[in-house]
Image (tube, rainbow, N blue to C red):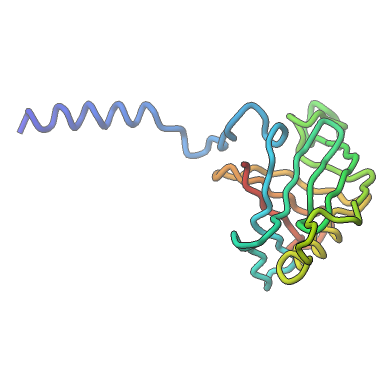
Length: 175
């Protein structure tokens, strides 16, 4: 019995030493929370009743890349280029203080331009692609601001700041 308990106890102590406390915030993978990677939209949630999931079979999936002062990407039907500002709720930074991307809690779209020529070439923008495009082009509008969250699955969630209980949100996965 002692031969069985000693290895089991050693393994339990080793595993306990490697775990993180339950109240510790999840640490995103990589050096940046949001910047430096391409994010692919996996859900657009415009109301509590909507499913919002974007199928893996969609021909052109929406995506976005965040830079220090810009946001570029695609709605699935049209490419866009936006100028953005980042803000932090950090008490040391002051109320709603401008922040760099790595420390940002929110992002505001200062200006945005859509490429009306589209990116789909000969593929017609219909069905789920059109649904995603219509919702994203309403959300990605000049003056709209979003809370930035990276969840425990390292998924980016942008939630529209509109003072509504169930605000619209966009969920992305890092590529």
